[in-house]
Image (cartoon, rainbow, N blue to C red; front, side, top):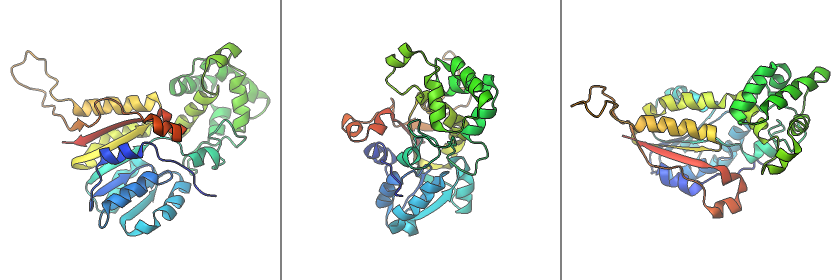
Length: 312
């Protein structure tokens, strides 16, 4: 089955990455390889793309989509936090640009069979990398109620986290919760009808997002990556991140702000004693959102938030 996905904000990504022939770029989240293919077209004839994805389906798809650029591409099955190891294998010290697209692909939602969507009746898996030991089903059926409550509240920012976690535990005492549809029905039944009518999203949206984040340790890995990413950029190297919800965007925004900040000394001191210097310049002073025309053509892009930096 074909791997379906439409890359978000391709024009803006191309602008902020500023891809040039002969340079080295990293796509840390290949997905459907739409961004990767666009990068390859700009770095010919002798540039290099390092492509990474933890979903083996994305790697298999990339081998086909990027076949015409095979001599300019190196693919790795893994997570972007492993980038230092991958670059060491390639004997590359630093790169000219990096891209992270933190969203789900259409393939994962529609065709992966891993229960990412509450609209399907699939096994509760939700693993990006199927070699990861714990599935969403394991978490739902084994985690204490307090743990479930914290996951749903913290990662899903779900108002009704207490009642949802309580009902999940009540149901699993009678029967194991195995499928995405089972879970979606439990969640919908835990939220008052008046609250559901006031929402513009499916009642299970936040819970499914929270479980996916927990199972894949998405926020922890993003924070870890941002700690070392600038070290692997050449001077004026670019980092562009596409996030899709407020938790991701907050992490990116705060880390970029810290990297851009210079001296922290009180203004009254005659000279700097802290030694802190700016490491990057912000290419996006404010978050960049997709244009109305793109949202109309690709509704999945509507929640995209883009931030970009360049290394000093």
